[in-house]
Figure 1 (tube, rainbow, N blue to C red):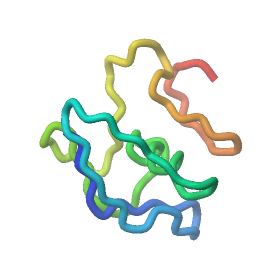
Figure 2 (cartoon, helix red, strand yellow):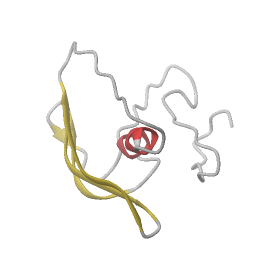
Figure 3 (cartoon, helix red, strand yellow):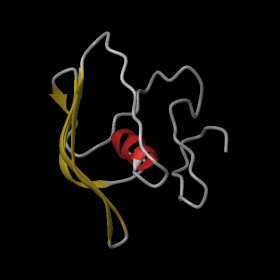
Amino acid sequence: MLVVKGLEAFYGRSHVLPDVALEAHAGELVALLGRNGAGKTTLLSALMGVVEHRAGMLAVGGADLGGRGYAPAAAPRPGAGTVRRPGLRQPDRGGEP
C-alpha cells in the first residue's frame, strides 16, 4: 500500500505541489489525470525521489520512507521507473539517458 499525506514540492521558489494526499492499496489500479501543468509528472518524480519534497509523509507497505522517494532497488532494468522530463536535472543512477 502507498500512502501519501501532505506532500509538498517546489521548483526553486515555485510551490508546485501543495498538500497532496492519496492512498493506493495492493491490487488497485490507480490513474493520475489532469491538464497540462497540473503536476502529474512532478508528483511521480517526488514519489520516486527525483524531485525533493519539502513536507509530507510517504509510506510504502506501512514503512515511512522518512523524506526519501521510493525507488525499488530491483528495477527490471537500469532506469526503469524513472520519469524523464526535458530541462529537469536528472541524478546519475547508472541507467540510460
